[in-house]
Length: 353
Image (cartoon, rainbow, N blue to C red; front, side, top):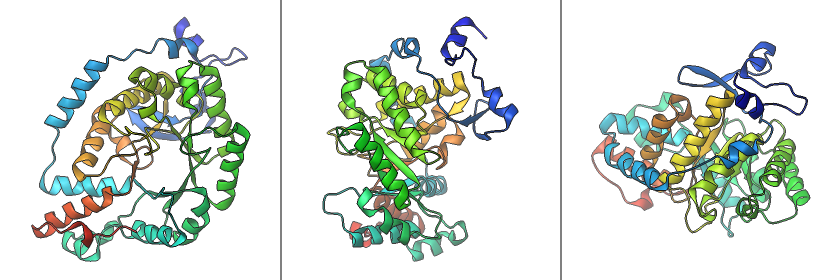
């Protein structure tokens, strides 16, 4: 191991972390594979400021890559239908409106259990696949409602937390909010970072904040929302991604869905490549969740193709990839109906909560 690599992964006691340590002790099992190498779940590493400060992003190159990705990536006919079914299984079906009610959440959970109408399932002959979404994402206020509505389905309940969407409440209040959601039955917590720490280059404070949130989450999966639309530059997005992963985030997520700019392909490429570099250096896999502005079936296949190109098949499953979406399911269902019948239906034929 090179001296630079030793410094990157040295713990405070001077010992060196390698993926082999976990394989020997058996404390963790492989959850993914990248270029033939098995990867463990992310347990975080000590903050490496040299790594963070060395991050560079060629913005024009990233934007060109995003343009060519859209132009050359298409899936048709039965392959398109298969990719759309996969997109449904990677979906965090979400309602985060100020006028949410218990009844709306119950209807959303019913749709999560059966995201495709029975007639379409019959025509596609997919009943035995038991297609359902990965999770339902709600405010803390509705966690118990979602837990009761999804009981026995295997669908996870995700709660937005830590002062969502601004993330500006005191840290201890944000930690307490995480604990309350876990006590209510949440399986996953979506936390938001303090954007001002990124602007000020206060990486140690950002690391400590995310690490404290992760400690509060315990074994519960934690998704760190970077609010990329607020971070102004792709370099800031990349740096925040690395710090969140070093602090132990299980997923990094693009947006709250409340920013003026949410999930974009250039941001997706930057975050995916940060995940890849982190995996190559540490032997640990971190998931990715684009959220906000993903409304069409075509967009869902573009994001899945991005995952396949940049990270591989392991990131085309719900364990490492999620869509944060609400209206997306409507368009996917319309496209599946068109594949099954040759006709497009109106949006109102596919109500969502």
